[in-house]
Image (cartoon, rainbow, N blue to C red; front, side, top):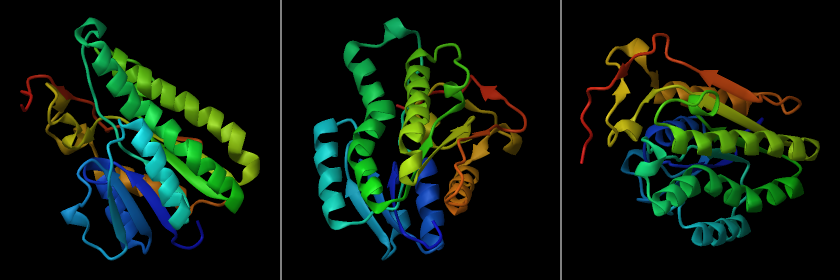
Length: 239
């Protein structure tokens, strides 16, 4: 994007989505932020539009995206929303499995179902997915989360092939452990030292760099890791 345009950011109320929205607003972009709670007090800016939307409610998500595209020109999607559920597969109910896949994978497909045709009509557009190191290497107790993130990576790769000739650039950012509210309700977290986790601002900077890259290239994937990996398994979940 040569000039600041309008970016749709999912998960804009916290973590990577919040950091990305804040950075883009500072760079002069218009940001439409999707989150379950809607208004984000940390982003009180005339260029920020908040939309309260549950990504797990796919029918409502589809209709709201279509309504949005009728009134706004979107130049870029940053899909940063996600949630983590970890444990052996038998620990999850069918409803929990379905809900996790909807938020972490299917919501991206539903948004792109409407957004990609709009990008094709414009002759350009960017899609940036926030994936995970779990899309590169599955770990213990991560069957549910990894399945969704592997699926997102496959969707991203196929979408890139489908859209390249239409001027649409599709990228994937795979961070390792990020120090964010993602771990608030989990029983583990990154180690306490600064080298043990990626900061949300680091991921936001990578997203912005992708957005500034030439229209003639595609940054397929960027993998980010803490310099020293350490997991604190003694952390107690918040309830």
